[in-house]
Image 1 (cartoon, rainbow, N blue to C red):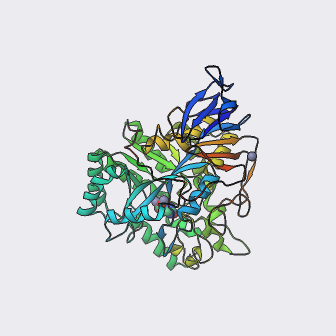
Image 2 (cartoon, helix red, strand yellow):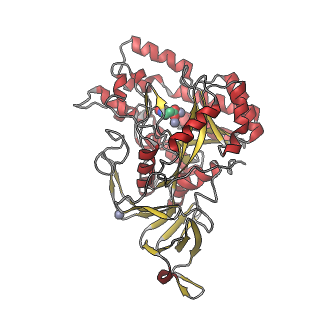
Image 3 (cartoon, rainbow, N blue to C red):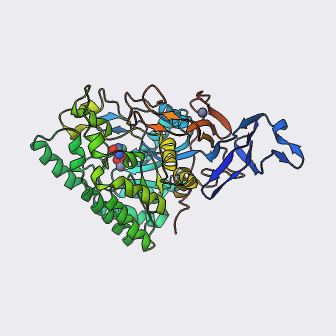
Length: 478
Ligand code: URP
Ligand code: ZN
Ligand code: ZN
Ligand code: ZN
């Protein structure tokens, strides 16, 4: 097995930073050493197969994106990134593990939905991957299937309080699933929006002729998110089940999570880069020569982008600092404008919901370090270490220490990244939700289990490099 030395860099973890060299033996980290590359009198640089010079750069654990939807059938079409294209784009951006959502649709067995997801991903991925399980039809059979999930290495499942007729679960179904989760240690992930009430508002807006993408954000009002978040917290409290609320965008939902956490409840929340940087007015309300007011379709996702006048983004950054929110995932669910988002021209409710961003999360959050929103260590924590702990990967992933997988990113704080289609963009999309964003940093080198798969503007990996990772139960519970 090849040996590699990453020399001269600043190793950054969730707990601190230090000048150190990292010795890799095959797929794992052998040692983190005082700078100088000497071990018991042996000059390591002269004896390893490969030396990577990281002088002046950060050496961080590879990113873990715990919320992606490769190839998801949704909104009358399917997410445009396959496991092959989406995980390659992730690697380009310094993410070395994804946790994607296997789907049980209405009327299907959970086991069959999961098997189909394994089939899609096997042999295709550039990086390691795990699965959460979407349960779209809670009944006796799926509750029984939940009991066997942890043995499959799937320690979390997602329910939807939104999307009636698609993935929606009512309170009775949620309660029963949470009872099983409390019993088995599974993490319940919740899409917290009041779907039935939203559907009424959608119908009323369409009847009033309000059909542009902007009204997607009007219909999915913050009250819908706050109410559902509160309800999910109460059901989790009653059943003593740990709860993780996905794609939090409203400051009022953050307040609900914070209040529950203050009582000691095992309640957690993630936000996504789109909610930290983008808004209802500037993106959902955008207009262009090419698309007119339909331009905003590029940013139709749920929960929706929020009003800049209500300062949700400021509160989300603040919550990331105070640990009222624990981590950032992308909710990567890309659709092209042509033939996909276009399905909703003239009716915003038919626009496939989702934004692509798996490639840019590490950079966009690093910009938060540059802008003074979060510390360098917190950047590593919310993009790698906490995702690993939250979803049962820690020790193997999310940290630079002896024995861990050698999933490592060399990040250049003096580098620069211009985001956009045809520039840094490797996702399978005909536009970028992040067109024109400039990042004061750069992903230089990416190692996945010891292999260099990205080396400054060169892709060296192959489909099938990544393997399915069985996850344990959450390591983040109080
Ligand atoms: O708009 C979104 N978020 N699409 C993906 C599905 C989901 O709800 O996470
Ligand atoms: Zn969701
Ligand atoms: Zn999602
Ligand atoms: Zn560079």
